[in-house]
Image (cartoon, rainbow over all chains, first blue to last red; front, side, top):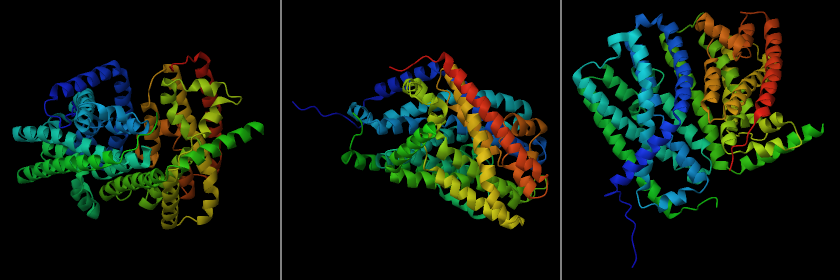
Length: 270
Length: 260
């Protein structure tokens, strides 16, 4: 009798929960690494803040801007998923072959693994939030109860957008056989257009217009902007809708491309 | 001389293996240029809010950006493998290196050139030239550029070697230590005077990454004596390189293989 593997993902939620739990356990085993990572990233954030402090003439001159920068840093650290690295290395070393043999959907499995990165790193960023709160106070809090709900919803969608953007770029490794090029391509676009160093409403001319057309803004700017009320009312709903459409579109595109690649896949290594 | 020949052979052979990945080379170069463009974009946003930063005009800041990118790119071409220390340590791949009949640090550093560095080199050179022309600095100073870039590359690489030695001592996958050094380099693109005194001291004395970009551009734009720009970077490079090499060798005194 021939047994077909169910790759739809339906009925495999327990498997995904197991993937999530085991990845979380691995994170707990390397908690010291996350502290080092947070400290190292926080130094970069502190230097960015110092530059903006110089430009604005002090934190007290523009608390909303510094609140945005703090949340942008937190979102960036939280959504800095290791998916690109894990998947990239497994493609490069040929280990993706064993992943594809597993009776679960590969994309969902990778997604759940990536979500553990976000959950774990997100908890650590609460330290930054607490520290920043002592300086910025209410400026860091959501603009309204609706902004809180929309902001959290947007953060969830940002997680989906970020994963699928990474997954799309990671698939280039099947052609490049090396992960530097694709990951640095995505990173450069992320740095320029996500709003991680400055709110997009401060971007000049064509740079702001271009950022508005790209999905990268939905990783940082949209959730932070909604939370703080920079995007409010109809603008917030519109941004949420666009974010949801990007999440869906990127997911479908990623799956379609991955399906095509699998049909022509040559496994490296052995 | 024999050791130099071995180093050159190691460098050229690994360069050939890198050339195998042509699509990755193209994407890597584009990505590196993209990252430079992104940081210039950040500068643009900042300058929109403050057209002159601490007396520094945009074109002068752009010169510092260019020099920093050149330092970054040169280090990636010649000394990139230091970034792989955590991975090689965890996988026990240093065992092999330690039995080679050469000194471990230089051989390790030069045997993984990264071709995407050409993106940083090209964009750095273009940025510097554009900034220098707009600032009214003579392009004859381009002849001195390799001198400052070489000093900056040695300083940056020495700091990375300290991070590598720390990783070997701590016996862990602390990749972020290298990220931290890179973050400091990226922030040395800004005139150091925009930071508080403690950070200025950090970036000019403790981790003197601003010494080979900010100080030379300060001299070229008439803010500091040229003598400082000519004397301080090589002194810092020499001192840091000798200390970093010692730290690396000492870290390996207690080396225990972790591989399987």
